[in-house]
Image (cartoon, rainbow, N blue to C red; front, side):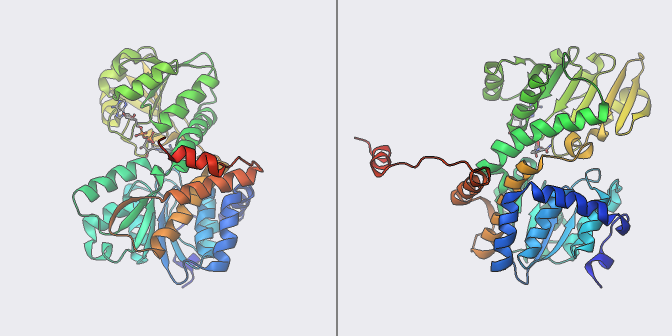
Length: 416
Ligand SMILES: NC(=O)c1ccc[n+]([C@@H]2O[C@H](COP(=O)([O-])OP(=O)(O)OC[C@H]3O[C@@H](n4cnc5c(N)ncnc54)[C@H](O)[C@@H]3O)[C@@H](O)[C@H]2O)c1
Protein backbone atom coordinates (compact mmCIF):
# COMPACT_ATOMS: atom_id res chain seq x y z
CA UNK A 1 0.00 0.00 0.00
CA UNK A 2 1.26 3.51 -0.77
CA UNK A 3 1.64 6.11 1.97
CA UNK A 4 -1.36 8.00 0.65
CA UNK A 5 -3.51 4.84 0.78
CA UNK A 6 -2.38 4.07 4.34
CA UNK A 7 -2.82 7.63 5.55
CA UNK A 8 -5.82 8.79 7.53
CA UNK A 9 -6.70 12.27 6.31
CA UNK A 10 -10.02 14.09 5.99
CA UNK A 11 -10.04 14.42 2.20
CA UNK A 12 -7.11 13.56 -0.07
CA UNK A 13 -8.67 15.77 -2.78
CA UNK A 14 -7.69 18.86 -0.75
CA UNK A 15 -4.01 18.38 -1.59
CA UNK A 16 -3.61 21.22 -4.17
CA UNK A 17 -4.39 23.87 -1.57
CA UNK A 18 -2.01 22.14 0.88
CA UNK A 19 0.74 22.12 -1.77
CA UNK A 20 0.23 25.83 -2.30
CA UNK A 21 0.62 26.50 1.44
CA UNK A 22 3.79 24.37 1.61
CA UNK A 23 5.27 26.18 -1.40
CA UNK A 24 4.60 29.55 0.27
CA UNK A 25 6.36 28.66 3.53
CA UNK A 26 9.22 26.96 1.67
CA UNK A 27 9.89 30.24 -0.11
CA UNK A 28 10.33 31.83 3.34
CA UNK A 29 12.37 29.08 4.98
CA UNK A 30 15.89 29.39 3.54
CA UNK A 31 17.55 27.41 6.35
CA UNK A 32 15.37 24.37 5.74
CA UNK A 33 15.89 24.74 1.99
CA UNK A 34 19.63 24.58 2.54
CA UNK A 35 19.26 21.52 4.79
CA UNK A 36 16.98 19.84 2.26
CA UNK A 37 19.75 20.15 -0.33
CA UNK A 38 22.44 18.89 2.06
CA UNK A 39 20.31 15.99 3.29
CA UNK A 40 19.34 14.99 -0.25
CA UNK A 41 23.05 14.59 -1.04
CA UNK A 42 24.21 13.07 2.24
CA UNK A 43 21.17 10.87 3.04
CA UNK A 44 21.68 10.95 6.85
CA UNK A 45 18.39 9.12 7.47
CA UNK A 46 18.71 6.51 4.73
CA UNK A 47 16.49 3.53 5.50
CA UNK A 48 15.32 4.96 8.84
CA UNK A 49 11.72 5.26 9.96
CA UNK A 50 10.94 8.56 11.65
CA UNK A 51 7.67 9.36 13.42
CA UNK A 52 6.68 12.94 14.05
CA UNK A 53 3.99 14.50 16.21
CA UNK A 54 3.78 18.23 15.60
CA UNK A 55 1.13 20.84 14.86
CA UNK A 56 0.28 19.73 11.36
CA UNK A 57 0.38 22.85 9.24
CA UNK A 58 2.52 23.93 6.30
CA UNK A 59 5.82 24.65 8.08
CA UNK A 60 5.75 21.30 9.82
CA UNK A 61 4.87 19.64 6.54
CA UNK A 62 7.97 21.12 4.97
CA UNK A 63 10.11 19.81 7.85
CA UNK A 64 8.65 16.34 7.24
CA UNK A 65 9.60 16.62 3.56
CA UNK A 66 13.15 17.70 4.46
CA UNK A 67 13.55 14.63 6.71
CA UNK A 68 12.12 12.53 3.89
CA UNK A 69 14.65 14.07 1.47
CA UNK A 70 17.35 12.82 3.85
CA UNK A 71 16.34 9.25 3.09
CA UNK A 72 13.80 8.61 5.87
CA UNK A 73 10.40 7.05 5.64
CA UNK A 74 8.26 9.47 7.62
CA UNK A 75 4.99 9.13 9.53
CA UNK A 76 3.27 12.15 11.06
CA UNK A 77 0.37 12.90 13.40
CA UNK A 78 -0.88 16.29 14.55
CA UNK A 79 -0.09 17.38 18.09
CA UNK A 80 -3.45 19.06 18.60
CA UNK A 81 -6.78 18.21 16.93
CA UNK A 82 -7.60 21.86 16.23
CA UNK A 83 -4.25 22.86 14.72
CA UNK A 84 -4.28 20.26 11.93
CA UNK A 85 -4.94 21.71 8.48
CA UNK A 86 -6.68 19.09 6.34
CA UNK A 87 -5.36 20.36 3.00
CA UNK A 88 -1.76 20.25 4.26
CA UNK A 89 -2.30 16.74 5.66
CA UNK A 90 -3.63 15.65 2.25
CA UNK A 91 -0.61 17.15 0.46
CA UNK A 92 1.76 15.26 2.73
CA UNK A 93 -0.04 11.98 2.15
CA UNK A 94 0.21 12.53 -1.61
CA UNK A 95 3.95 13.21 -1.21
CA UNK A 96 4.46 9.80 0.40
CA UNK A 97 4.45 10.78 4.07
CA UNK A 98 2.30 8.44 6.18
CA UNK A 99 -0.12 11.00 7.59
CA UNK A 100 -2.56 10.39 10.43
CA UNK A 101 -4.45 13.56 11.31
CA UNK A 102 -7.60 15.49 10.67
CA UNK A 103 -8.91 18.75 11.98
CA UNK A 104 -11.35 18.41 14.85
CA UNK A 105 -10.43 14.81 15.69
CA UNK A 106 -12.21 13.53 18.80
CA UNK A 107 -10.05 12.42 21.70
CA UNK A 108 -10.38 8.78 20.58
CA UNK A 109 -9.49 9.64 16.99
CA UNK A 110 -6.57 11.78 18.13
CA UNK A 111 -5.22 8.89 20.23
CA UNK A 112 -5.70 6.53 17.29
CA UNK A 113 -3.58 8.88 15.14
CA UNK A 114 -0.81 8.93 17.75
CA UNK A 115 -0.90 5.14 18.02
CA UNK A 116 -0.72 4.88 14.22
CA UNK A 117 2.56 6.80 14.01
CA UNK A 118 3.94 4.46 16.65
CA UNK A 119 2.60 1.35 14.86
CA UNK A 120 4.87 2.56 12.05
CA UNK A 121 7.69 1.24 14.30
CA UNK A 122 10.05 4.24 14.10
CA UNK A 123 13.67 4.41 15.25
CA UNK A 124 13.60 8.20 15.47
CA UNK A 125 11.05 10.63 16.90
CA UNK A 126 10.17 14.28 16.66
CA UNK A 127 7.79 14.88 19.55
CA UNK A 128 5.84 17.91 20.73
CA UNK A 129 4.63 17.99 24.31
CA UNK A 130 6.04 14.46 24.84
CA UNK A 131 2.79 12.83 23.70
CA UNK A 132 4.62 10.02 21.87
CA UNK A 133 7.01 9.55 24.81
CA UNK A 134 4.07 9.28 27.20
CA UNK A 135 2.34 6.55 25.18
CA UNK A 136 5.60 4.66 24.66
CA UNK A 137 6.53 4.69 28.35
CA UNK A 138 3.01 4.07 29.66
CA UNK A 139 1.65 1.51 27.18
CA UNK A 140 4.52 0.25 25.01
CA UNK A 141 7.65 -0.25 27.13
CA UNK A 142 9.08 -2.89 24.78
CA UNK A 143 8.75 -0.58 21.78
CA UNK A 144 10.33 2.30 23.75
CA UNK A 145 13.53 0.23 23.98
CA UNK A 146 13.74 0.12 20.17
CA UNK A 147 13.78 3.92 19.77
CA UNK A 148 17.30 5.15 18.93
CA UNK A 149 16.56 8.77 19.79
CA UNK A 150 14.69 11.93 18.98
CA UNK A 151 14.02 15.59 19.54
CA UNK A 152 11.39 17.34 21.68
CA UNK A 153 9.93 20.64 20.50
CA UNK A 154 8.41 22.48 23.42
CA UNK A 155 8.82 23.62 27.03
CA UNK A 156 5.99 21.43 28.31
CA UNK A 157 7.44 18.32 26.62
CA UNK A 158 10.84 18.99 28.15
CA UNK A 159 9.26 19.31 31.60
CA UNK A 160 7.64 15.90 31.12
CA UNK A 161 10.81 14.29 29.72
CA UNK A 162 12.87 15.72 32.57
CA UNK A 163 10.42 14.17 35.04
CA UNK A 164 10.85 10.80 33.26
CA UNK A 165 14.64 11.16 33.22
CA UNK A 166 14.67 12.07 36.93
CA UNK A 167 12.69 8.92 37.69
CA UNK A 168 15.26 7.00 35.63
CA UNK A 169 12.64 5.60 33.26
CA UNK A 170 13.38 7.48 30.01
CA UNK A 171 14.37 4.66 27.66
CA UNK A 172 16.05 6.57 24.83
CA UNK A 173 18.02 9.79 24.27
CA UNK A 174 16.05 12.95 23.51
CA UNK A 175 17.47 16.33 22.58
CA UNK A 176 15.49 19.20 24.10
CA UNK A 177 15.14 21.56 21.15
CA UNK A 178 13.34 24.16 23.25
CA UNK A 179 16.42 24.58 25.45
CA UNK A 180 18.52 25.68 22.47
CA UNK A 181 18.97 29.45 22.44
CA UNK A 182 17.95 29.63 18.78
CA UNK A 183 14.60 28.12 19.80
CA UNK A 184 13.25 29.82 22.89
CA UNK A 185 14.85 33.24 22.34
CA UNK A 186 13.12 33.60 18.99
CA UNK A 187 10.32 31.05 18.54
CA UNK A 188 8.82 31.36 22.01
CA UNK A 189 9.31 35.12 22.26
CA UNK A 190 8.86 36.57 18.77
CA UNK A 191 6.93 33.67 17.25
CA UNK A 192 4.37 33.33 20.03
CA UNK A 193 4.35 37.09 20.53
CA UNK A 194 3.24 37.76 16.96
CA UNK A 195 1.11 34.72 16.24
CA UNK A 196 -0.99 34.90 19.40
CA UNK A 197 -2.21 38.34 18.40
CA UNK A 198 -2.61 37.28 14.78
CA UNK A 199 -4.81 34.36 15.88
CA UNK A 200 -6.68 36.49 18.39
CA UNK A 201 -7.40 39.32 15.95
CA UNK A 202 -8.48 37.20 13.01
CA UNK A 203 -10.79 35.19 15.27
CA UNK A 204 -12.37 38.06 17.18
CA UNK A 205 -12.03 40.91 14.64
CA UNK A 206 -11.68 43.23 17.67
CA UNK A 207 -9.26 46.02 18.49
CA UNK A 208 -6.42 45.55 20.97
CA UNK A 209 -5.52 49.24 21.36
CA UNK A 210 -6.90 50.75 24.54
CA UNK A 211 -7.78 47.40 26.08
CA UNK A 212 -6.29 45.91 29.22
CA UNK A 213 -4.51 42.65 28.46
CA UNK A 214 -3.62 40.30 31.32
CA UNK A 215 -0.73 37.98 30.49
CA UNK A 216 -0.50 35.06 32.91
CA UNK A 217 3.05 33.67 32.88
CA UNK A 218 6.03 35.85 31.99
CA UNK A 219 8.36 33.21 30.60
CA UNK A 220 9.81 33.22 27.08
CA UNK A 221 6.39 33.15 25.46
CA UNK A 222 4.81 35.55 27.94
CA UNK A 223 7.52 38.14 27.28
CA UNK A 224 6.62 38.10 23.58
CA UNK A 225 2.86 38.14 24.13
CA UNK A 226 3.16 41.09 26.55
CA UNK A 227 5.55 43.05 24.31
CA UNK A 228 3.36 42.71 21.23
CA UNK A 229 0.20 43.57 23.21
CA UNK A 230 1.90 46.78 24.33
CA UNK A 231 2.99 47.42 20.74
CA UNK A 232 -0.64 47.14 19.66
CA UNK A 233 -1.63 49.80 22.18
CA UNK A 234 -2.88 47.71 25.09
CA UNK A 235 -2.25 48.32 28.76
CA UNK A 236 -0.56 45.17 29.99
CA UNK A 237 -0.82 43.47 33.36
CA UNK A 238 1.45 40.51 34.13
CA UNK A 239 0.62 37.77 36.66
CA UNK A 240 3.50 35.53 37.77
CA UNK A 241 4.47 33.13 40.53
CA UNK A 242 8.24 33.41 40.02
CA UNK A 243 9.66 36.47 41.82
CA UNK A 244 12.53 36.93 39.34
CA UNK A 245 10.25 36.92 36.34
CA UNK A 246 7.88 39.24 38.18
CA UNK A 247 10.78 41.67 38.69
CA UNK A 248 11.64 41.41 34.98
CA UNK A 249 8.03 42.26 34.08
CA UNK A 250 7.91 45.17 36.53
CA UNK A 251 11.19 46.60 35.19
CA UNK A 252 9.87 46.24 31.67
CA UNK A 253 7.16 48.66 32.77
CA UNK A 254 4.17 46.34 33.11
CA UNK A 255 1.78 46.34 36.06
CA UNK A 256 2.39 43.18 38.09
CA UNK A 257 -0.25 41.84 40.47
CA UNK A 258 -2.00 38.62 41.56
CA UNK A 259 -4.59 37.18 39.21
CA UNK A 260 -7.50 37.92 41.54
CA UNK A 261 -6.57 41.61 41.48
CA UNK A 262 -6.12 41.61 37.69
CA UNK A 263 -9.37 39.70 37.07
CA UNK A 264 -11.81 42.68 37.31
CA UNK A 265 -9.50 44.91 35.25
CA UNK A 266 -8.74 42.72 32.23
CA UNK A 267 -10.56 42.82 28.89
CA UNK A 268 -8.40 40.04 27.43
CA UNK A 269 -6.61 37.25 29.31
CA UNK A 270 -3.85 35.14 27.75
CA UNK A 271 -2.32 32.22 29.67
CA UNK A 272 1.21 31.04 28.78
CA UNK A 273 2.42 29.10 31.80
CA UNK A 274 2.56 25.42 30.82
CA UNK A 275 0.59 24.90 34.05
CA UNK A 276 -2.92 23.80 34.97
CA UNK A 277 -6.03 25.85 35.88
CA UNK A 278 -4.06 29.10 36.20
CA UNK A 279 -7.30 30.94 35.41
CA UNK A 280 -9.83 29.44 37.77
CA UNK A 281 -13.40 29.98 38.96
CA UNK A 282 -12.56 32.53 41.65
CA UNK A 283 -10.95 34.77 39.01
CA UNK A 284 -13.82 34.20 36.56
CA UNK A 285 -16.33 35.32 39.21
CA UNK A 286 -14.59 38.72 39.29
CA UNK A 287 -14.20 39.28 35.56
CA UNK A 288 -15.97 41.96 33.54
CA UNK A 289 -18.89 41.20 31.29
CA UNK A 290 -17.42 40.40 27.87
CA UNK A 291 -13.93 39.41 29.01
CA UNK A 292 -12.17 37.19 26.47
CA UNK A 293 -10.01 34.26 27.56
CA UNK A 294 -7.36 32.65 25.38
CA UNK A 295 -4.51 30.27 26.01
CA UNK A 296 -1.12 29.97 24.31
CA UNK A 297 0.37 27.28 26.58
CA UNK A 298 0.81 23.79 25.16
CA UNK A 299 -2.21 22.05 26.68
CA UNK A 300 -5.83 23.15 26.94
CA UNK A 301 -5.78 23.02 30.75
CA UNK A 302 -4.58 26.54 31.57
CA UNK A 303 -8.06 28.06 31.60
CA UNK A 304 -10.19 25.87 33.85
CA UNK A 305 -13.00 24.71 31.59
CA UNK A 306 -14.60 22.69 34.43
CA UNK A 307 -14.88 25.95 36.46
CA UNK A 308 -16.19 27.89 33.45
CA UNK A 309 -18.79 25.22 32.73
CA UNK A 310 -19.70 25.06 36.43
CA UNK A 311 -20.35 28.81 36.55
CA UNK A 312 -22.24 28.98 33.25
CA UNK A 313 -25.99 28.65 32.78
CA UNK A 314 -25.62 28.38 29.01
CA UNK A 315 -22.91 28.01 26.39
CA UNK A 316 -23.17 28.80 22.71
CA UNK A 317 -20.91 29.58 19.80
CA UNK A 318 -20.65 33.36 19.44
CA UNK A 319 -18.45 33.19 16.33
CA UNK A 320 -16.47 30.36 14.78
CA UNK A 321 -13.87 29.32 17.35
CA UNK A 322 -15.35 31.50 20.12
CA UNK A 323 -17.68 30.08 22.78
CA UNK A 324 -19.82 32.38 24.89
CA UNK A 325 -20.38 31.27 28.49
CA UNK A 326 -23.32 33.08 30.07
CA UNK A 327 -23.02 33.18 33.85
CA UNK A 328 -25.86 33.18 36.41
CA UNK A 329 -25.64 36.96 36.89
CA UNK A 330 -25.90 37.58 33.15
CA UNK A 331 -22.21 38.31 32.53
CA UNK A 332 -20.68 36.74 29.44
CA UNK A 333 -17.17 35.31 29.25
CA UNK A 334 -15.74 34.24 25.91
CA UNK A 335 -13.31 31.37 25.41
CA UNK A 336 -11.29 31.15 22.20
CA UNK A 337 -10.58 27.81 20.47
CA UNK A 338 -11.80 25.72 23.43
CA UNK A 339 -8.81 26.96 25.43
CA UNK A 340 -6.32 25.36 23.02
CA UNK A 341 -3.31 27.31 21.78
CA UNK A 342 -4.87 30.39 20.26
CA UNK A 343 -2.10 30.92 17.70
CA UNK A 344 -2.42 27.42 16.27
CA UNK A 345 -6.03 26.45 16.92
CA UNK A 346 -7.27 29.85 15.74
CA UNK A 347 -4.45 30.79 13.36
CA UNK A 348 -1.59 29.41 11.27
CA UNK A 349 0.96 29.31 14.09
CA UNK A 350 4.30 31.04 14.15
CA UNK A 351 5.61 32.95 11.14
CA UNK A 352 7.57 30.82 8.66
CA UNK A 353 10.87 32.65 9.21
CA UNK A 354 10.74 31.89 12.94
CA UNK A 355 9.89 28.23 12.45
CA UNK A 356 12.72 28.03 9.94
CA UNK A 357 15.20 28.34 12.81
CA UNK A 358 13.31 25.99 15.12
CA UNK A 359 12.93 23.34 12.44
CA UNK A 360 16.56 23.69 11.36
CA UNK A 361 17.36 22.79 14.99
CA UNK A 362 14.94 19.84 14.76
CA UNK A 363 16.49 18.56 11.53
CA UNK A 364 20.09 18.98 12.70
CA UNK A 365 19.20 17.65 16.16
CA UNK A 366 17.61 14.53 14.68
CA UNK A 367 20.71 13.88 12.58
CA UNK A 368 22.89 14.46 15.65
CA UNK A 369 21.02 12.09 17.94
CA UNK A 370 20.67 9.33 15.35
CA UNK A 371 24.29 9.38 14.21
CA UNK A 372 26.02 9.69 17.60
CA UNK A 373 25.86 7.41 20.53
CA UNK A 374 23.85 9.32 23.14
CA UNK A 375 22.88 7.58 26.37
CA UNK A 376 19.17 7.35 27.25
CA UNK A 377 18.05 10.58 28.90
CA UNK A 378 17.35 14.22 28.14
CA UNK A 379 20.23 16.10 26.49
CA UNK A 380 20.84 19.63 25.35
CA UNK A 381 21.30 20.39 21.67
CA UNK A 382 25.09 20.82 21.33
CA UNK A 383 26.18 24.46 21.31
CA UNK A 384 27.83 24.15 17.89
CA UNK A 385 24.43 23.33 16.34
CA UNK A 386 22.84 26.34 18.03
CA UNK A 387 25.60 28.59 16.67
CA UNK A 388 25.41 27.01 13.22
CA UNK A 389 21.69 27.80 13.05
CA UNK A 390 22.34 31.42 14.10
CA UNK A 391 25.04 31.71 11.42
CA UNK A 392 22.71 30.26 8.79
CA UNK A 393 20.06 32.80 9.81
CA UNK A 394 22.52 35.69 9.52
CA UNK A 395 23.80 34.46 6.15
CA UNK A 396 20.24 34.19 4.85
CA UNK A 397 19.74 37.86 5.75
CA UNK A 398 23.09 38.86 4.23
CA UNK A 399 24.29 40.07 7.65
CA UNK A 400 27.97 39.74 8.52
CA UNK A 401 29.43 40.13 12.00
CA UNK A 402 32.89 40.77 13.40
CA UNK A 403 35.27 38.11 14.68
CA UNK A 404 37.54 38.28 17.72
CA UNK A 405 41.19 38.88 16.93
CA UNK A 406 43.61 36.37 18.43
CA UNK A 407 44.69 39.00 20.93
CA UNK A 408 41.08 39.66 21.98
CA UNK A 409 40.38 35.96 22.28
CA UNK A 410 43.41 35.42 24.51
CA UNK A 411 42.51 38.50 26.59
CA UNK A 412 38.95 37.28 27.04
CA UNK A 413 40.19 33.89 28.22
CA UNK A 414 42.93 35.05 30.58
CA UNK A 415 42.66 36.30 34.17
CA UNK A 416 45.62 38.67 34.26
N1 LIG B 1 1.74 28.80 21.56
C1 LIG B 1 2.89 28.41 21.07
O1 LIG B 1 3.10 28.41 19.87
C2 LIG B 1 3.98 28.00 22.00
C3 LIG B 1 5.32 28.14 21.64
C4 LIG B 1 6.31 27.77 22.54
C5 LIG B 1 5.94 27.27 23.79
N2 LIG B 1 4.61 27.11 24.09
C6 LIG B 1 4.14 26.61 25.38
O2 LIG B 1 3.86 27.76 26.20
C7 LIG B 1 4.03 27.42 27.58
C8 LIG B 1 5.02 28.41 28.20
O3 LIG B 1 6.29 28.27 27.57
P1 LIG B 1 7.53 29.19 27.98
O4 LIG B 1 8.65 28.78 27.11
O5 LIG B 1 7.12 30.61 28.07
O6 LIG B 1 7.79 28.62 29.47
P2 LIG B 1 8.57 29.29 30.66
O7 LIG B 1 8.87 28.20 31.62
O8 LIG B 1 9.69 30.16 30.15
O9 LIG B 1 7.49 30.30 31.31
C9 LIG B 1 6.35 29.89 32.00
C10 LIG B 1 6.10 30.94 33.10
O10 LIG B 1 4.83 30.71 33.68
C11 LIG B 1 4.94 30.96 35.08
N3 LIG B 1 3.85 30.29 35.79
C12 LIG B 1 3.69 28.97 36.07
N4 LIG B 1 2.54 28.78 36.76
C13 LIG B 1 1.96 29.99 36.91
C14 LIG B 1 0.76 30.45 37.52
N5 LIG B 1 -0.07 29.62 38.14
N6 LIG B 1 0.48 31.78 37.47
C15 LIG B 1 1.33 32.65 36.87
N7 LIG B 1 2.49 32.29 36.28
C16 LIG B 1 2.79 30.96 36.29
C17 LIG B 1 6.33 30.43 35.43
O11 LIG B 1 6.80 30.99 36.66
C18 LIG B 1 7.14 30.86 34.22
O12 LIG B 1 7.75 32.13 34.40
C19 LIG B 1 4.48 25.96 27.57
O13 LIG B 1 3.36 25.13 27.71
C20 LIG B 1 5.09 25.79 26.20
O14 LIG B 1 5.13 24.43 25.82
C21 LIG B 1 3.64 27.50 23.24
